[in-house]
Length: 199
Image (cartoon, rainbow, N blue to C red; front, side, top):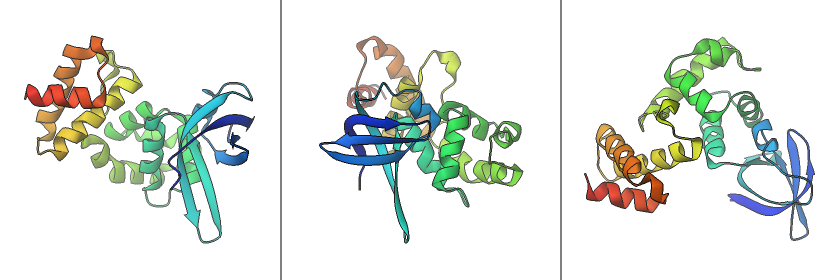
C-alpha cells in the first residue's frame, strides 16, 4: 500500500498532479482543496495517498492533509459513491463543513454539491452520521480550534475510547486536557498521557 509520497512537484492542474520521486513520476488525482495548497512546479511536496484498485485499473489519489484523506475514505465507504465523486465533494466543501452538514442533517447543503442528489445526500447522512458522531462529532469552531487542533483532539478521543473510556468521558477529558496544555503544543501521545493522568 502506498500511504504517502514525498518528491518534487513536476506538473499540476486543479484535479491532477505528477510528483517526481527519485526519477519515478507518480500521477495523482487530487481535490481542488489540495491543489490550492500546492506551491510552484519544482518544489518539494508531501502528500497522503490512497491507492484505488479495480480489475481493469489502478489509480492513485493524493491529499495535503490527513483530515482530507480521512473524509475521502469515509465518502467512498458510502454505497454508490466512488473515488471521483468523493473528490468532487471534497473540491466543493471542506471536511469541517461536510461533517457539520452530516451531523446536522443539512440535506440542502449536501444536495447543493455538484453530483450529489437528494438520494445520495440521504445515503451519506444515514451511513456516515454514526461514524462521525462516534467521537463526539466535529468540534464547534466557536471554541477557537483550527482544523489541525480538531483533528488532534478527535484522534486522542478515539484512542481513549479504544482504551475503554465512554465517548462522553473521553471527549470531556481530552478537550479539558488540551485547553490546559494547549500552549505547549502537545503531540498526540503527550495529550493522551496527560488525559489519562487526569481522568
